[in-house]
Image 1 (spheres, rainbow, N blue to C red):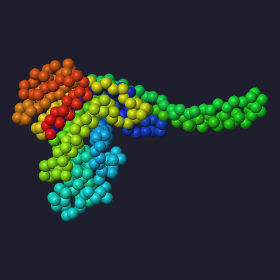
Image 2: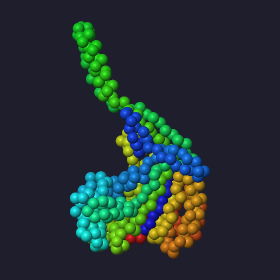
Image 3: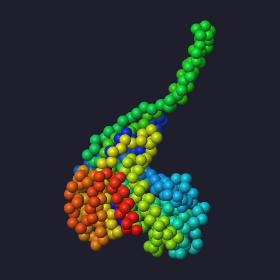
Image 4: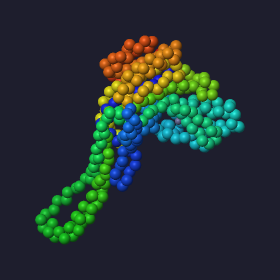
Length: 349
Ligand SMILES: [Zn+2]
């Protein structure tokens, strides 16, 4: 099954993507976007790379929770690295097609993440796999006013008070004065004052998932034999279920002190066995629903295969249930829509 989705969520007080620090000031990442009127706007954004990284973490953890442990050493440690020259899964051989097929078989069968998220081996044999899961940047919707706050933080230092009598105090007064001055200086240093920026707004992102191509060879276009049907199904389902933390804002930096204050708003999902589905018009655009109605009406003429449409909350998409030739389902919440998507996928494999 091939899946396209676009979604909107309120993300308040987040610092999900730090770009650079200058002294004690950490700047939040910004990119330039062009809106529907052709105007260029610079906005706070979280990269698709960041979303992909968290999708990797949750896919791995969901699989682990099911007792599944086929991960390479890097992925086991939750580090996303290129395959290095010591990776014996890659066979240099003579660079013949059979070397590629054999290397791919070893890599994919031994690591679920390289199967789902792709890999690149710049040494030994130049072999790579495209990610089956792709994310746009997380950006504020086009009619959103910027809401940015700079907050001052400091580490909390525990000060232990020392009890003294008046006599003692007088005796030590002179010596202490100097000592107090030094301690004060130390404390200010210890407090390590730093500034951070936090952004708030209605955000959107899109994703494209080729679940059909998980567990499949890029060379033979057949399932990797070493992986059974059940194992491939497990990987496919984990790649869908790991979307849930992302639509609830668990994806980015600074979450320990700024777990985003999130409310998922809307999601539109299109799924089919047809590999040439268009990407949905992003929920970044104000008119994305009208644009997607037209797009889906056109897409249904591309294929005889069923096109499924899942929306949530259903009240937000009143016109979508009447598109002819589409299997429509309106759900109450975004998480329900992902659960429904997982069910659809399960019934297709
Ligand atoms: Zn791996």
